Amino acid sequence: MGLDSREATPGLVRRIAFAAAETRSAERASIVLREIGGNQVSDSTVVRIVWELGSELAQARDHTSAGQTLTQTPEEPPALAVVQCDGGRIRTRQAGQGLGVHGAAWRETKNACLLRMSHQTFAEDPQPELPAAFCDPAHVAEIAEMAAPPPLPETVAVEPELPAHEPWRPKRLVRTCLSSMADSDTFGEQMQREAQGRRFFEATARAFLGDGLPWNWSIWKRHFRQFTPILDFIHVLAYLYAASLSMHDEFSAAWTCYLELARACWQGRVAEVIERLQDWLVQQGVCGEIEFDGHDLRLPVSDAARY
Image (cartoon, rainbow, N blue to C red; front, side):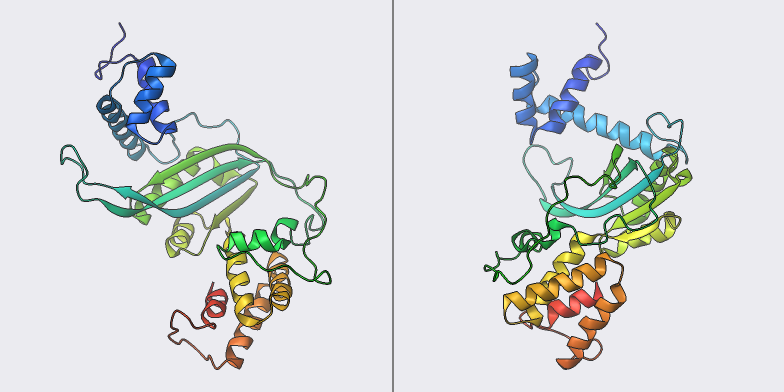
């Protein structure tokens, strides 16, 4: 009948894995399998098979030699290879404790995205001005996870017109994702092995994107020094917006300040931004490293300068 050691056909195992990946729980996966596929599979069977599959994939991943992947190696290297990594949070419980939840805790996950992208070069910057999405007060406040801003006077610039299209943007061709709760040393090795197998180190152009987490840049230094390091601009905007609100009492002045700082960062004039933030801190009596309490208005500016 084509049954394997799980007492299920390979086709059913694939359906169980897909249903489990696309739903929030084993219970929901069981419902989908029954109502959509006509397969009577219990919650516990879904958990058991997914656990076995995950263990097998992890073992295969960890025993794959450098330059190999679990999938077929591409015939050609990408024109543009982009590696991204970031941390997350996941709710876990202790294994081997029987039914129920035991030892529930939050743990950090490490996540990576490897992108094979199209690539072209330009004699001049194809997007010298800050994109319109980053010039919308409501959108920027949402990015910074802060309260919606008050209306601006008509004399204050809000956002430029949206271009009809942006042909300069690289197009994503293939995406590979990795996630683990391993330490950063182990995860960095996993990322490097996957990148080598996908011929990323042979790419014409290479980029490494991360936010301010220290382990992101430890991985870059150890495994991806050949890649151009890029700090996640979304986080930059959030810090600059919060700093601008702290530096000015009126929102219109704060918004103008934010636009100036964000535009300078977008155009690569980061040193000017750091100098401006540090000058403001000196004017407020901040020299060197000091301890701020949580309500000190100087703290967001200090954080932005550090970031």
